[in-house]
Length: 395
Image (cartoon, rainbow, N blue to C red; front, top):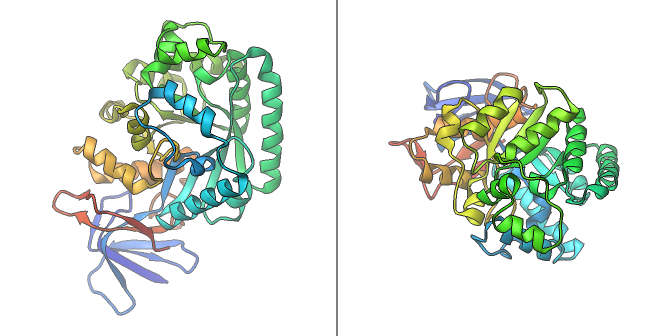
């Protein structure tokens, strides 16, 4: 048994414990937590806070080779132009090296589970071999309705390969603006069968303008490239997704559905989704949203509506670093009134719940194996992270 202690521990499902400890067995299983009354020679004491391993609720690890290659603040239209131009800008060996380096870094900094987007099989072996739990979302695109059957067939082949590799994977739709209605319907059906969907939702005003009203830079981008656009709905983009879901499956939905970004989601969108999505997680990627759009999701609004919130890093095409602690610092800067306990719940337990792994990850409850992570350089007076805070895995 190891007893690991710090200035505070955050069990997540209970209040923080000052001068607290967590006892873990040799295989990392939590035996118990408590307040340290006396420090023995075997106690491992650290300055900072102890938290369970993080869940990165949205990442594109395959895009790690794009670090430093993208311009910021281009909006979604400009970002799409860059991803189309640069996605294949490095040879496979370089892509693999960058991806593996970031995967190892995320684990060492405390990520115990990750929801990762894949457009090919390049990350499969790494995920199988690595110590981090991953759920892979095989993401599909295709704006032309006639292409939908072939796109789905290719995705199914990739899903079979993932299963043969031994990793958890599911086909998922990308977003309303990259897919015909037919493909969105078909991809959603595949994801629902697997029990998991990760869907880019209302990431920008450009998206809502394009889907709702056939206007704005993103709409113009598609028209200028001769691509098809779904019929205008006259409503926020999420309604288009909810309607396609109900065409293949009667509401309500108990499947795990992760809605990613949500930077322009307002109360009407959240209410509509929550009415029928009974196991929904609203994932925020703060640094990515600032990188592309110079904005963030309205976290206080989401909190006021009582939804489950989780945190992701997105990719190095839209971020300078893949780091959960840096994402939490960003939330602190923009929403200083949100307690650290709340933000850590998003980053640990809620993400695990989104992946159906909250029975073993996300908190220091007895019997779980979440990992133990130290975050240092804490402002204990205000109980917040500081610009100097870093994280590292202890178990």
